[in-house]
Image (tube, rainbow, N blue to C red; front, top):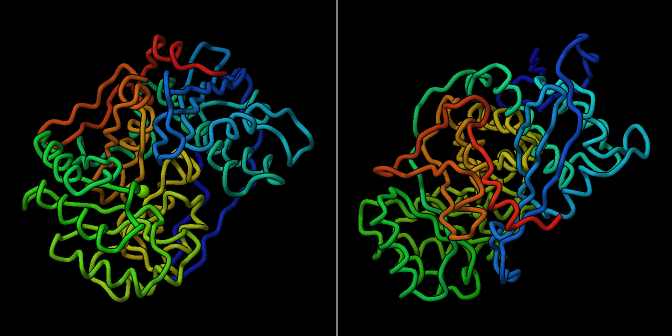
Length: 403
Ligand SMILES: [Mg+2]
């Protein structure tokens, strides 16, 4: 029984939820027996000074009394998200997520979401609590799919496409020469789009423009170039000048130019340049995205399934965005669990083209799951096995397990 008690508002309308719970389900149903939060970290040296979240991970494993095990992930501060899952009950609106969902029917992720949202109200509503809820919700969809013998996309409304166009996503190198070389390598690997982000972007206007120009040289004319400023700019007029100087390099979109709360700067830049603005990886729940779209004027909306609230919430965000004439391109950095979960969502959207394909060489990004998500002619296939369709490589889990 999966009830969606949310509707896309009419244009300009407000987001409304019904968070009422619908009871304890039927006798004899499969039940959740516990939630494990596995904190994993790249073996060897980790560089905490760069923006690479693929160096660690929080994998969620939900267990049931019938032996089905669901996999999810939270791309957040993993120690914080683990504490939110592991915390015992304090009172009815301040309980750890594991304690909230234990005993529930794992094949009803929507009901579990409502319970987790209510049960975390004192410390939750947004931020790390919603991140952690996302990971548990994804694991429940994995179980629901396995129980039904169907891929998750079939439970979410059925897929409209078998593969997505992958854009390679990695950090902006430190120099134009390296940016040119990295771009040329990714072009040779058949990607039809390449995103370079964070790194040195934002420090210096001339360097920003030179890095983007070098990336364009490496990509040639027929590969799209996404530029992720990584919150690097802090003045709308200065940002307008930098984007205009980048126009000869044909940026496909400009991502997160400003701090997430600077909605007026987003709006000013969006009004001044024709290049689409992308943002949303820091936002949680459709309420946040409503503000990002309506106040910020962002045109490419980027919910992360492991942060925004899970698969259902990401579908809500996409519906909201579409209703307002915006595109949804999910944010997805690291591991095969995130890749699979994102592909299931992108498969069912009415409109979707790009899939963010993180190309970091960390163990967790490349080898955490056995499935490889090969990019062939720039396309990556949507998983079709029951559930999410991914299995952990237990050797990598042992190698990387911290707690
Ligand atoms: Mg980004």
